[in-house]
Length: 333
Image (tube, rainbow, N blue to C red; front, side):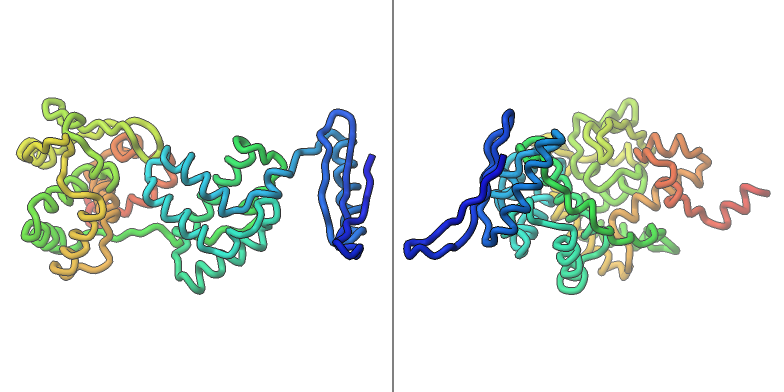
C-alpha cells in the first residue's frame, strides 16, 4: 500500500509531499515531490510495477550523477581497455559538459541529442569521433545496469540517431609519393622510414605496429605475432622480404620494444614528414589501405587477405579493394 504525507518547514508551511510504498517482498520505497499530484502518480506507478513483478530499484540511479558514474568508470573500467588514454580523454570531455550534473535516471535521449548538436556545431567533431563518444557513454550505462545495481536504468544513447559516417576513404599513394614520403621520413629519422615501410608491407594498424615487441618477431618464419588486435583475436602476420630485412637490421632496445618512438611521437613526426614531402591527405591509416589493396593486386583472394589484415567482416574488407585500373585490365586480358 502507499501513503502520502506533507512535508513542512519550521513555520508550518507545506514545502513538499513524501510518497511511501510498502509491499510484502519489496523494500520500502520513499520519495519526496513538490506537488501532491506528482507524489501520487509516482506511488501508483511503483505499486503497479510491484503488482506485475517488473519493479526494479531506482534509488541508485536516482542518486548518482553522470559525473560520479564517469569517475567510477574511469577508475574501474578504463584501465582494462586497450586504449585507456583515448578513453580517459573522452571521459574528461563528458565530465565537463552540463549533462554530467544530471542524475543517471533523469538523462533522456533528448539530452544526449543536445550534446550531439554541440559536438557538431561548437566542438566541430567528426561523425566518427561523435560515435566514439556515444559508444563510451552507452557502455557506461550498460555497466551501470549490469554491475552497479542500476537495473531499472534506461540507456538514452539507444534512443538517439547516430551520425552517419562518411564513405570509406580510398586515398592511395600515387606517382612518386611513396619515394618522396620515405625520403622525408629517412631525413627526419631512419626509424620513422622503417615504420612507414612496415605499414605499407604488412597492412598492420598503427597501434599494432607501435605496440610490437622484438619477441613477437620470428625472423626464421618471417612472421609477426599480434597477441592483442582490434577485433580481440590473435593474428600472425607474414612478412615480406623487405619487412623482414628491416626487423633483422634494427638495433635491439633494452625494454624489448621494437621502436623507440611512442605512438604520439611517431604520429607527429609522420605528419611533419608529409609536409616536407608536400603530400596532402595521406593519413597513417591510409597506408593500411594502400597495403591491403596491394595484396589484392598481387592476386590474393579475400580470405587470404583477411587472414593477413585481420578484417572479420568481408563487407568492411570490400572498401579496401580499390584496385588500379591498369592491373584489372591485365587480369581480364
